[in-house]
Each structure stands twice: as structure tokens, then as C-alpha cells.
View 1 (tube, rainbow, N blue to C red):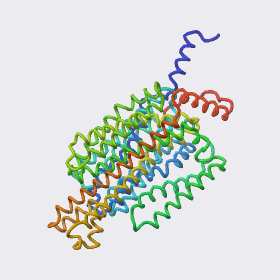
View 2: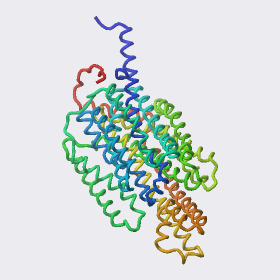
View 3: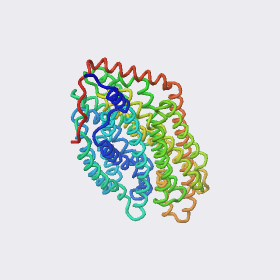
View 4: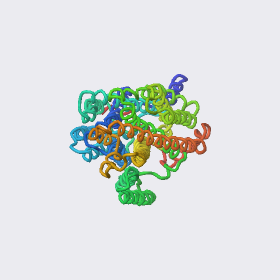
Length: 548
């Protein structure tokens, strides 16, 4: 007997709603908490940078590496580890990543030198490279339809908000404990996330059976690692040879990676899928918008403490407007994507990011009131809240579910490579601008003949180093600190101009190359038809996965 009208309507309604896993709420909570461990570890170091600088007499470039090390480890490994998760078990990779984050945090907290701290941050990023891409891959595999869009929106908003709360928690700890305490803050959350993931996250959902392109994985690590490190060392005159060597490694690895992916039977990164307009434009857009937030927080925390004199708790609390606006705007972003399309929502978010950088450039000076600080962070939070969902949604929607690891890896690259590149670029501009401004101040000073080369090296190294030097020469302390503040302002203004340029470039890319809503829907359907044709006859639907 055929289905009755009620049964037919129920089937149509179920299809319209899309699929979701058993105990969907707890599964999503588990995945968001795993992502939170990675996000929180990403952000905790920023507020501690002045204290770390004091503890190790670190240069500005070394502080840049502490801030960017976690993003570097994550961005360099995420494609390879995402593919390994697709092949050998996403849940297993998730559990291994959360587990590895524990010793990485302890090593960072107990680091005896700035070099060990940078290594610990990179290892922490590698642990996140195991766990973080798996969260979005599982959302893509477990949900479909509007439910997937809403899940990605919550994943993006809460993950970003927790990342923004990291400096607040770190600031509170630094009021009472030493700098290393900020790296221990995620340990309790990691334990809870691990227990929930083991209990609720399904295992072996839409995973592949093809061998992993490990050579491509090694090349991707060399490409991203070489690129990010070259940017960080570029402003240092003594590191020009190293910079050129790293740039050469990145270039050679990039060429070899492309050739390898074209020839490999089972490529790590499907260049055919990556060439889809919705995919690559969304990837570039996400790199800029997520990187903008991370770079603004990185420089902003130093500005608040070095120039405005905020204590660590005040500096950490200062970015709350960004977290609040991300939570408010991300769910609305999901609705805008469904009704107006990804292009409109991306451009809307970019407009807020541009306003954020403009506010920082124009109004963030010595004596700036907190109102301007809050407004700039609110603009940034709104921008990321709006643009984050369409950037991730467009990636996952333009690939077949069998490539969920590639899509999630690219979505993670938006954040982590974006954060690594934007922090590196803006940090390099800040470093070069600060050093140039200090050198110019010394040259124009009537006491320039009394400044030895070793003292000048300390003054140009970083604000923290200048503050330490001021204590050694109390008769010139006020002049040194005031000069260091002005030099930092000069450097940060140049960095914000670089941020403005990046956002404008991304906006132009989206305006001209990302399709409008009608064309976007047509392209997504064309991609789906192509993927179904390549996959051959559809397999019978499998029952919904039960929790492992």
C-alpha cells in the first residue's frame, strides 16, 4: 500500500528539516567544548605578553612568535591531520588532540625560556590541529539543511566568544599569579570536553577509506610554516638570510604541493574542488576576517597595557564587547545567509571590521577613553559574528560530504592561517615601525651621543625592554617611557593601516567574485549534481548513528 497524505507530508517535512544525530544537543555541546579548548588556548597568551616580555627580556619579534606560535602549529597541521581523521576516525583524532593539549599547556606554563615557550605554543597548536578540524567535519557529516547552518553558527559564535573571553580570564589570573598561569586555564575545560566527547560524539560517520597523501601533508606543513616564520623574521635586519631561506622553503614547498596534488591518486587537497569559486573566495574572505580579529586583539592587548596603563584584568575585560557582539550577531548571520545569501552577509560583516580598524587608527592614542576601545572591539565582534558563518558555510556547502575533512580543514585555516598571517603581518609592521620610531627619537635627541649601541639595541627591541632600560637609568626614565609609548603608537598606526588595506582587498574580492544569491544557489546545485555524478549510484540510506 502506498504512503498516505500524512506520511508523504511527514517525509517531505523531514527532508526540508534535514538530518541530525541522536542526542543532537549533547553532541553539539561536546563539539563546541572541544572547539573551545582550542579557541581558549589560542587567546590566553595575548594579555600576558607584557609580563612575558618582562620575565624573559624578550624582543617584540619573540613576543610575536609567542602570540602566533599556536596559530602556526594549528594552521601548518590542520589539512594533514584533518585528512588522517577522515581516514582513521574523526572521533579518535578529536580525543587524541584534546589529550595532547594537557601536556602542551603544562610545558608552556613551566617554560624556562622564551624559546621553550614558543615550542610549547607550537605543540599546543598541533594538538588543536588534531581536535579542532574534527569538530566542523563532524557537524558537516552529522547535520544537513538548516540544522547544519544553525549548528555552524553556534559553533562559530560560541567558539569565537570563548576565545574572546580568554584574555579576561587570563587577566584575572595575572592579578594574583605569575605569567605561566594563563596557560593552565584550559585544563579543567579540556577534561570536561574529553569526557563529553567520549560519551556523546558518534564514531565513524561518513569517513573515507582512501589512503592519505602523507607526502602532501609534509609539504603543506613546510609551506605554511615557512611562510609564517618568514613574515615574522622579515623586519629583523639580522635575520635577512634566515627570512630568505624560509621564504625559499615556502615557495618550493608550495610548487611541490601543487604538483603533488595534481598527480596523486588520492590527493590530500582536491584542487578541483578548491578551484570552485564559492569555495576559494569564501576561504580567502574568512582568512582576512578571522585574522583581523586575532591581529586586533594581539596588538590591542599590548596597547592597553603599555600605552594606556591598564592592569591585566582591565585589559582582559576590555575586549568583552567583541565577545558579546559575536554572540548577538552570529545567529542572525545564519538567518541572513538563508534569506539574503552569503555574499551580502560577508560584505555586511566586512563593513563592521573596516569600522573597527578605522576606529583604532583614528582614536586609539595616549589618553584614549575606554568608550573608543569598546566601540572598536564591538565593531570587530559584529564583523566576525556576521562574516564567520557564511565563510564557513560556503566552504562546507560547496564540497561533497566525503570531503568534509577538507572543508573543515580549510574552515580552520580561515581562522588559524588567517590569525597566523594577519598577526605576523601586523606584528612585523608594528615591530619595524616601533624600532624605526625609537631610532629616529634617539637620533633627534640632544643626548644621542650618550646612548651606546647596546642601550639603543635594548630600547628598539620592544616596549618591555625599553621599560626595563628605564629602570636602569632613573634620571631618563620618564623620557624613555614616553618615547617608547610614542614609538609604539607610531608602529600600531602603521599596523592598523595594513589591516584596513587587507579588509578593503577582501571586500573587493567578495564584491566582484562571490556570486549573488541566485547564482550562488545555482552553483551549489551544480556542484551537488557533479559530485553525485562522480560518486555513482546512491547507496541505501544508513540508519542514524548512535553515540559511541
